[in-house]
Length: 404
Image (cartoon, rainbow, N blue to C red):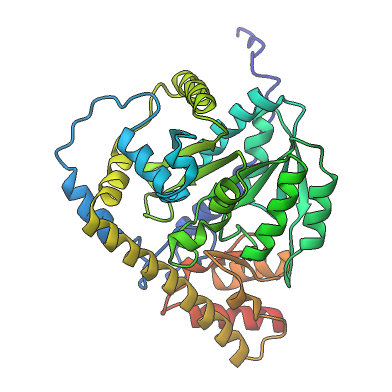
């Protein structure tokens, strides 16, 4: 028998599966009929089914005869223009003066990677990236994969945003440090800064020459009002006149999860700088993916450019945000009626798709084993996974688990 040659890949160590996707895999394999997935953050309708937004359904019909030719390297031009107008505001000085560079990206994750790659080129790999604690699980991985050192900010507690820790970190960070801010619906805590708090943060960012990067995954889905949810981005870019990065996704706000529709945008000081930044983005895109996919971008453009579809989409955002808010209230009410030990009021005070219940890992495992309720070990739950048929069941199971 011939001996096996040494492998070129012996230096590669095993990487455990992503916790959230593994949780969904386990949930899908569970044969029990009464099971609840509160792990992955995808919006479901009142019956627990994926929801195609009416505006998106109409847009798909509108573009059904589109061709399948390559897009330009930077993406679908109409998508980039309309998406930039949407997030910065049509009357933004940065838009009006041609100071926004953009490229289409593979949803929010791809936008974060492109933004990080650009900032490493501009600021150097020795720059520190600050993310919140807790934060979206992929933030650290994305920026470390680019070569940045990543540090955490103590962002929240059970009572809300920890402004004292946040301000202390902002004041202690070296100039040109990158701060990754959640534009709205902080994932996973559900605690958002108020406009007054954003103004306080912005003043320090400007004074200390820090670089703000906004992860904008939930705009419009947080409150039902896109303009309200985009407050921080517009305040930093226009009111403070800061150079910023925005990593935009339409996965949540239009339900285009699998289409991977996103945009990476930078506001800069002059149109000349913007042109240079955009040329660099084109070089990065060409090297990474050559050019982006067309279908999802065409859907978004069709919605944003049509007055009727745009008006319908605004209604769709209200539908989704209202149902999420109602599920928050029903879960809180159920736990309150059952006199479940603990402080559950924060369920209704937090915003967006997620909240952290404050359960122990043992309690989370017990809920999965005994009641087939799946959530992250941190007890982060996707409120969108609740509906009229399971929210009471979830409350009862949490109650029994906490009281056992």
